[in-house]
Amino acid sequence: MENSQSHTIDSSFIKAEAMRLGFSACGVADADVVDAHTRRIYEQYMAEGRMADMNYLANYPDLRFDPTQLLPECHTIICVALSYYPGQPLPDDTYQIAYYAYGRDYHEVMRQKLAQLISTLADTAGITDTSTHFRICTDTAPLLERYWAVRSGIGFIGRNHTLIIPRLGSYYFLGEVLTTIKQTTSPSTRMAACNNCHLCIDACPTGALHHDGSFDARQCLSYLTIEHRGLFTPEQEQLVASQPPPYYIYGCDRCQQCCPHNNRPTPTTLPEFKPHPDLHRMTPADWNTLTRERYQQLFSHSAVKRAKYEGLMRNIQCVAKQKTPETPPKPETPHITNI
Ligand code: SF4
Ligand code: SF4
Image 1 (cartoon, rainbow, N blue to C red):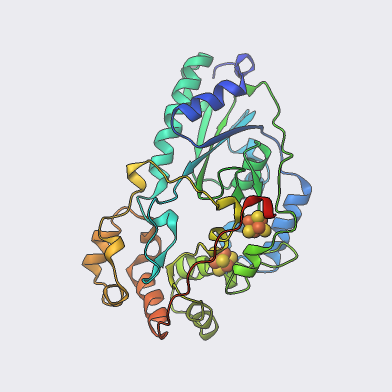
Image 2 (image 1 turned 180 degrees about the vertical axis):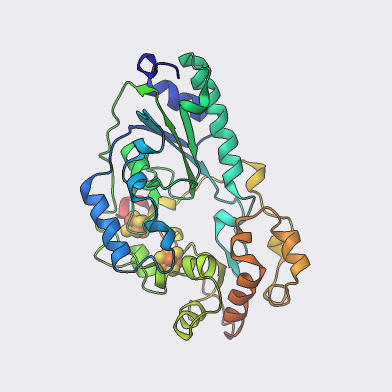
């Protein structure tokens, strides 16, 4: 293995390269163990069962709370963000899919871009064996992504539990590179926060966001319509069915749509994240009669595949039982100065 002691890169160079590759934001953090406060909150979340049946979140605690164990001699965590906001959201008079799932599954797109970043950094540092000096994470390792994004100086975690990037918002995929390279500067992690705002808590139709800052996945439409396997219990069905129109059948964006930081989102320019051209033409009647073949056409490379055809139809059948009332106009998103 090459001597990692000699590899140091200016963090401003790393950020400039990331931006040149098309990332919307990049930050760099020193790799270290996760602070005790964050660990306590995470463990409490698990102990209280608020992660629903996502039991995999309890796996690999040694790695999750000490990312230096994910890559030997890891010194630095590079965090990047990639916009997924669609230029044209689905019409309000039909069923809704979370914005992030309109286009191609992001994992491969993110991985390819991070591989390009690694290539540049390896050349600059004179590293020939990238496998021992870099590790890409695209939600594929037990890493606290949003924690490290905050540590890297990209943004802060809002009351809606998303990573919010000042001036950009929260419609971003996150990715990381763990590396043995050292960086030269420490980011400032002091930045704007939610202050007195609680719009997302008010906007959540199921009460999944709490005023004490906690979150309960068991009540969240994103968990129920994406992660939950099998039939809904009567209580779960009630949560999904009782949401106000427009009805979400995969994920939910309500606690982001209302956020002042998403007042002027920047649409993605990546063709990979553009939806199938027919998605915007789907009516509730089309969804209600969706065949397996049509599902394959619409979502062949999409994250919607995670729910599988059966899961999506379960969600559709649940909301289809509702009598579709007139969709109220979306409230104006308040300006950022209101918080
Ligand atoms: S995704 Fe939807 S259901 Fe989940 S917390 Fe946000 S608003 Fe509530
Ligand atoms: S809606 Fe308000 S409270 Fe919620 S994340 Fe955005 S700024 Fe924070």
